[in-house]
Length: 332
Ligand code: KG4
Ligand code: ZN
Image (tube, rainbow, N blue to C red; front, side, top):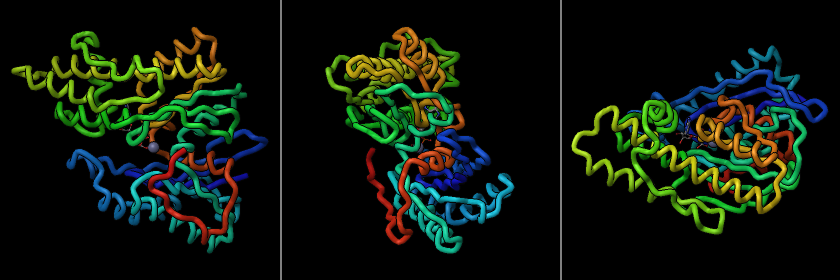
């Protein structure tokens, strides 16, 4: 089955063609047009601006993707589009475009949950997955631990009570005045820093549930910065490394605890923050020590993309295009 995936939930206009054959997936073409350069001067995504950019770019991005795939619309078997969660007007651009194409091309269409799609990006490895699995989804808007018994059973067992992990990276980068989005910049700067220089709190690490809280950690960084007379580049690197270590410690501790409690045979890591090298390496190492399989997509499939939407689209049932609705608060 050839699936055209379309993604526009935040600040990436993306399209991809994926092929599903005997339950195995391959990416035929993948296009991600990022709006980061537009939004970075505001220190975050401006929804109205994002939606306008999606309107301008979505057809060229889809067209380019089909050209790269050397496919005509006739050869597409299914359309898959993100219906939520995300920014309402941005989501609407993707959905209305996909619905129009489904109508004109006379193709089946499925709506995709963006969070589940992050998780489904792990299927690109085409590895046998041993169940149950514990899946950590860490993005700019969400931090969730999901228990899965098979490819379509999801139970949320933990989530952030305030800021998402990616949001914390973005806000700390903003207060250090080092740019947007914060995750990649902080992780780069952290390489030059000492993770033990500042002893930041590990919020909720001792709580018996699987929930997270990152806003206090962000405030702790803020208070520390205020106390320092001159925040030079070395200090920024130390703050970045110490902050990153605190986030990673909490994420790993809770994920491993969930894996032990539910006797998971696989741990999956996905979402934009899964691009973080320290998190990837450390969680993999710990999972291996516990003899639990570990899966995480390649970095380019961790941040927002449409290949994951195409893969997720394989697991959902087509609906009449008229029934497809945007749901900005959709949960797993
Ligand atoms: O999944 P994603 O692309 O978009 C959402 O669905 O939110 O995630 C974006 C988030 C941003 O907050 C960004 O700072 C974070 O992922 N991120 C990272 C890294 N790369 C991106 N966080 C930590 N380390 C990274 N290397
Ligand atoms: Zn995302």
